[in-house]
Length: 305
Image 1 (cartoon, helix red, strand yellow):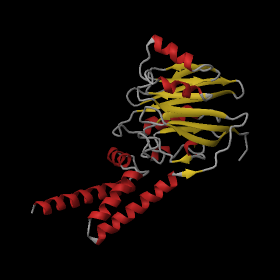
Image 2 (cartoon, helix red, strand yellow; image 1 turned 45 degrees about the vertical axis):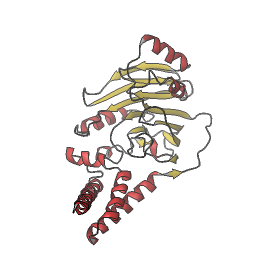
Image 3 (cartoon, one colour; image 1 turned 180 degrees about the horizontal axis):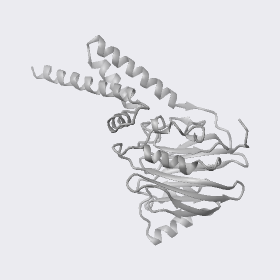
Image 4 (cartoon, helix red, strand yellow; image 1 turned 30 degrees about the vertical axis):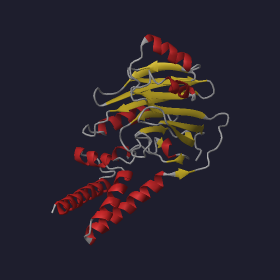
């Protein structure tokens, strides 16, 4: 009797997670409501794949088994699409390296990570945590050649000059900082640093519209941030052709940037204007639950396809 109850509980659980996984598939790109967003963000392809496999093993009804097999296949195809083994070209003169890293408020104590943040021409860091005066001096010494601008829990570093900056975000919804920078080879262009609040209960429409507006005027813009929103969200539908997702560039591995090395969600993103071409992307693991994303960008000329 006890065994039968446990078996019934397992089958009810399998049915519930299967239905939740199917809702995640249905709501993909349809996250305009809070309920849809919560379900979609909570059911990435890896978790749906596990749910489909679990249901296929446990459930006996042919209808549920068909749903489980279909869920398993759809999720497997999504994971297959995420994983790539591209040949990555070497860095050539004139290329620009940019990166985004959510430090998870560990940056002050994670000194091994500091030199990696100076290995690009443009670097944005969100959730930096608080730096004491002494720690900041040691961080600056560990990242020679970089000029840093701190925005309160967020910072931008460039291997050149930060000419100006302004805050365009909305408190408790999203942080958005637009800076005009100048690099020795690449001249002047706009950089936008973004940190969207993580709660899916906060609608994304206002944040995404604000970021797009901040990036619209410069075709050489680079947008770096933790968007806490998958790129397939409906809120990105108006971004093309103004911006392109650099995370989709040539890579070796999964596209997802969170969590702790598991390919769950692509939260940390780099978007570029039309006069940049992404030639390679890579992920670097540090102490944070987010990976550092580094891309190599090639300048394009107006009219170049």
